Length: 262
Image (cartoon, rainbow, N blue to C red; front, side, top):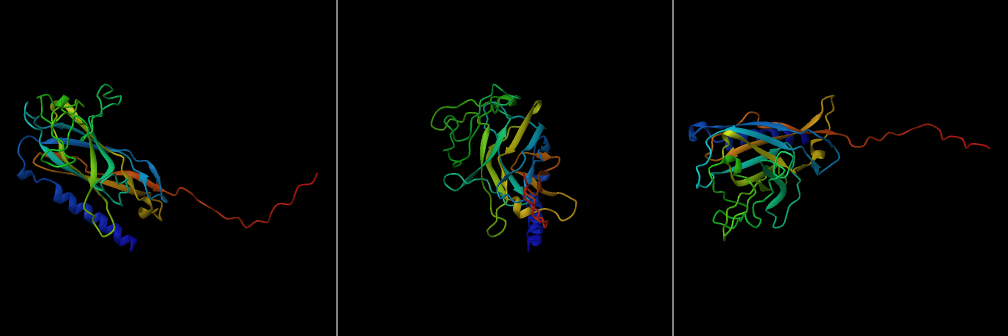
């Protein structure tokens, strides 16, 4: 049964990747190309909520958004080869998975503040619904995700952190999908680069188990964009964790030691 479920996951990931990728014929403009990379920590085979490695996209090219124009929104879908067990947050719609753009408050961008979609100055109460934020370009793609707050009843601001929400379950009682809906994606063009970091995703490593051969069991993550933006990922599916036993117990059949004498 377990083998069948694993094959189902593999099939579902492939099918979804095909279904959620925008066909080239339906796209217009210059394509943005993204190189993918990931961390591969060791996780415990006995764990149900193991933190997998970050999935990072470094993007170049495309046509930046014209000044004064809202940045085109895309849906980003993430799926694992096992259940996603990130904590469900208030309301039951979102979980703790995060999409962080252009590395705010890090050594790469130490002076860039974090501004999450839905915070004061980055309202998500507009016509697109909760969890969806708008960004209006100033014509400089390097500043699109500056973390600057907006104002007004629906001030757009420049958020750089977006929260994941539960995707559609791929099988009864299972869920290996996280979706970031309505993310403004501004192509970096040729003057800068764009970094997207998927982080804080937890996985059911116990479901994956440990391989019976010398090959290490893996947890893999796949990424797909859905929208009118022409975006190409060089390798959408990556290993984000290796699964190993966290505890090995052995029994001894030897006789007890004799008490020492003084």
